[in-house]
Length: 307
Length: 241
Image (cartoon, rainbow over all chains, first blue to last red; front, top):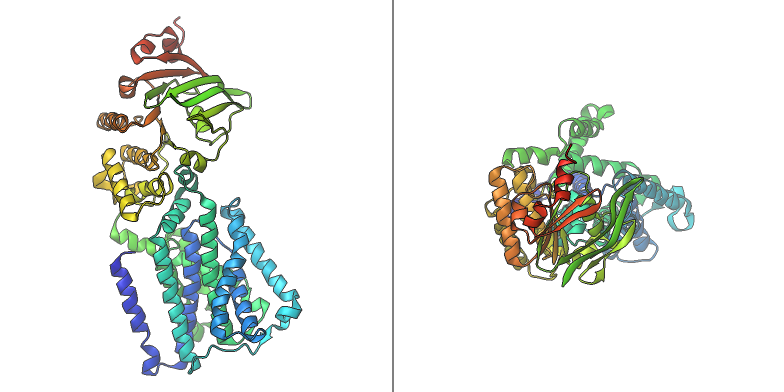
């Protein structure tokens, strides 16, 4: 990404800091805050896609982050901010087995493995009652000390999204980003040029897992209640995938843009008017990507720019 | 000193003998043309040397190191580079980033970013693509893609470069550019083993021509001598009636 779009993103982030200051409706603050969260998850999924890896199991990292932060702050007595940071590390660690699996698996087999892994994580959380509370979940998770809670969560979610974008943009400009792009484009050729793919794939999974887990932790502290089907649910694996591919999985800004468009269309437009159809945008987005927009919204921007 | 040695290398695919007990040494700094009709085993030989397929028997040595069965990235680290008959590029990346992959992850490692960029741009100049450095690989013509792949393969500073039909399918202008590329490679002192389907510009500039037919070497020597060999004429034209 060039300096100009980065500056534009910074200006946009500053503009987005205004709504809570001008007495925005609390419901819309909540919706926007949740939108930032989805955008972060799509950004994390897009990071992995940029490295050529497909995941159907990001719920594993979201749930791991949610439970890690909840347990550390509630049972171990850690400060919620510290627990939030640790949740990122836990997410990276939980992603390591899939990163190692990517040494031998790729494409559909890897995608199915990630899906199975997320299901295993959900079942572990469901049955390890002594630690997780089982199906009853965890109640009364400490919230982040933010003063005005809803406003605070809005800013924290926005901050996490901006931080995720800055981290991903930075990584893409380093040799790590070049390795990820080369692996995505033609792994066998990259190997013949001296690149060892395994550590870069592992790093992609760890980074994506960490960012997703941060989202999970944020969710846990915002909602203050989690249970396995809520934070390890299949929707948390599939929606970031749909959002990111709709926005343009290999681009930096496509995944968060896709996430915001779809989530806000579903939540702000369809939920109040046609509540039974509020998930239609996700299905339509998938159909559009398959039939006419293989590169998502970013592909349209690219067509305008030229080759 | 021999840079590459193949010692009685055989490769079978089921009942098909692609290579038969093939022994070959390529001297350091030389430009060797590998010729042969379709199915002679030229590309299989490259696949065996570059670790993409294991030999059925025999050993391969690069600078006296046994490289038989090593993984491609290990071979790159030891100084082996390769191009393909149909260019294998990173299609969505700009030309300069295609070259940067080899420059960054090949030898030598740990150079500053600015130096890596300068090297990549220099290599694009070597193959005459400096004006196309920002174009995506998919936006390049067939000839440009082949030359870009050559620049990519030069990125890790190979000691031995395997070049697969760089001049095939190109216009006369493209073939002239390829001939210039070979001349520049010679100036850089890179040992080159290059496949061409038939006698052409490569055979004229090569130090030596090796002709394969049905997995065996049927001629090996100076270009003029090989061209006059009856076995070579047989391999290309078949037996006279």
